[in-house]
Amino acid sequence: MNIGQAAAQAGLPAKTIRYYEDIGLVKPRRDANGYRAFAETDIHKLTFLARARALGFSIEDCRDLLALWEDTDRASSDVRQIAKEHLQRIETKIADLQDMRDTLKDLVRDCAGDDRPDCPILNRLGDQALT
Amino acid sequence: MNIGQAAAQAGLPAKTIRYYEDIGLVKPRRDANGYRAFAETDIHKLTFLARARALGFSIEDCRDLLALWEDTDRASSDVRQIAKEHLQRIETKIADLQDMRDTLKDLVRDCAGDDRPDCPILNRLGDQALT
DNA sequence: CCTTGACCTTCCAGTCAGTGGAAGGCCTAT
DNA sequence: ATAGGCCTTCCACTGACTGGAAGGTCAAGG
Image (spheres, chains in turn yellow, orange, brown, blue):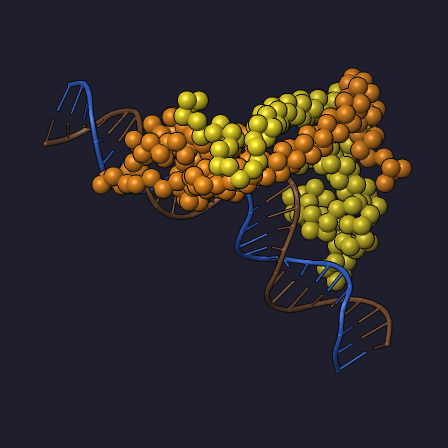
């Protein structure tokens, strides 16, 4: 299977797949003409990667998860640990964004949004008294 | 005021301030020895930038907001528009992260996390049937 | 006067995870 | 034979910094 089909199957851009090969996540063999030839196992790996990335795992996390996935003897506790740490990072990020959102919401609500130059948003961002 | 003091005042790393000068956000004058000399208005700008960045505004948003802030004649509706668009992006990001979190939570909950090799997390990521 | 150490300067490279594009080779159909 | 749609590699760019090297400047202490 050429890279175009592989991309369609895995739901990843061809460029991304080439990049994943560059950094050693997949190692498709090559046809005589130099084209990448993806086997079923490669597609399977790419699909795994697409899903893990969609869940926000970093490339390095994905590398670890792939290794564990390929290791039939692995302990599920290793996987769970990676997932739990990732979950914690996501929770933190959500909380940070929610703080931002709340502040922004207040600012937007207080801003008349008309033609007058007085703007609570800019006042708040530039207020010396808050420095 | 040298960059060290400016950094302390604005709550930004000196490196970041140099970077902001590079991309034209601040333009401190220079002393005879080549050191940057930050005036009060520069500090004020840097503080503004630090706050806007902390609220997640992009550098380009900050550039626009700074321009509006310096324009005493601006209409607050312009600012409000930028803030509202940013707010929308944040809401979307929060929703995305919450989806990830929910999925991950389910996976972590279902994973025994012991020494047995069977792991629902990997099963889910690699399941062919979901392809 | 000399040295030490803290500060400052510029410039280059790297981060993360790709993305865009150029230049050129290959393959199939007409 | 040629058109087009694939494929290849390689290089540069993204955002917003961050790290580090090599070297200049300044104030204090001996």
